[in-house]
Image (tube, rainbow, N blue to C red; front, side):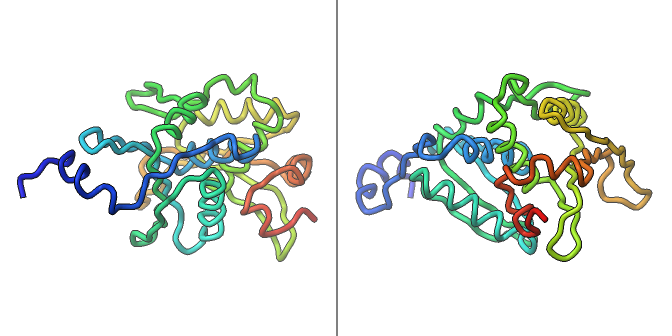
Length: 226
């Protein structure tokens, strides 16, 4: 129609749903850090300056992680922010338009050049409080983690990443909590779709149980703490 976005908004904006504002302080420390963890694992930024759109997109497994997506959506609702969620093939997409959320996450996560590509890296994690670290680990487990279980009992957990830089930071963070971790290097198979080496940061049963009662991880809650 050759009408600018500004003109359309000026005339029709009053008929649209108003943008909601995020109050990150409505979440407690553990919940705030959960958002940081799940962003590091399954989040990506988007910028649409032409339309004034900025925010975060989370991609979760549509079959296995509906409960994780629902919990994350509840956190944003608690913070007063409207979200959209939809399925894209096997991925469940949660999209949040919020420049304030981008600013919040940039305090704890940066992008660094590592091995000729940009990788997520943690900022100042050595000075994070225990509550901060546990909230972060909870979110990262729900994004890229696996809780080993049999029935309703769990037997340790692991977090997978192809980010070599982040892997080293994660090991140091967990050791800072007094935990003993093992790292397993997983080379891609001959017929594997993935072409990069992955790393499994593993917490054995005894180590995981040292902190599991303080986690808000949905994947952990599926199997209790027995």
